[in-house]
Image (tube, rainbow, N blue to C red; front, top):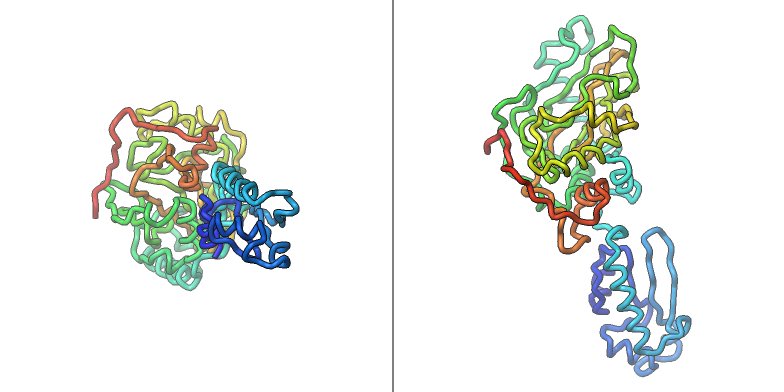
Length: 387
């Protein structure tokens, strides 16, 4: 409704903007109608006194203003509306989002911390069924720890389900971050070499679990810090650039509870800014095994443990450096990290800043830039083929 009304006014602001203007009573449909209304022709005095517009700043603050209150003549009122609309159109950091699922707090978390959390969004009946099958695939008895031969295992896919069906809210959140379903790769890609999953389909989730049964349970628990071993950035199958599409997000799906000291992923939130600059300085790209994590971690100070309940979903910026942790409590932890692949590399130089996805906004934010005409200086490489 709001979109229709702004179109009637002829204002250059779609409904997605952070500011919105609309007449609350005798609603003008053109500048001529507005001139008539303000001058009093074609409307009674009561309607005249009620004619006003609303200035909405997206955080609940509303100002109700009338022509009389503003002291505006018929032409100056229209001019005021037009100027304010242009002002709203230019405020790139205060976009009224196009977000269908994400709250303002979740968006800000992605910009401030490099990740956001969507709680309770996975169908747990599917989770429990897939976990039961995983024990059968491994030949383990879930009630007998003596049968758990390996401390940690990486399973390939067996069962698949569209994300929009198994986790509708997670699906909406993913689309909010990448800028819409039209930007998502629909082709299934098969990896030539992998110690985990052998194919990637960004439209589906599967039971390619990482199961931490009791990794490191024979040693005292070590909290997250740069001294923990195994810090890395995901994406072993491609050359990394600032705008790479091959792993556009790092999702963490909790199919079981992820408890404190129970094998939760360690993350380094401020690594996003460091890795962004690292890749910015290397337009030739970086091979997956050539990242200097000693250098990267030396510039980081935030180290956190991811915990949550079965059904929770974490969306991390792909530049997040992370590591596996110990499970000293002995309760198996089931999670997946399904890559999100885009059709095209990130566009950090869109003509209209309102067209930047949240992912693109965040990448620019961590570089301290409004836009960037990024151009790789070497060929892109990915060790995969269409399935």
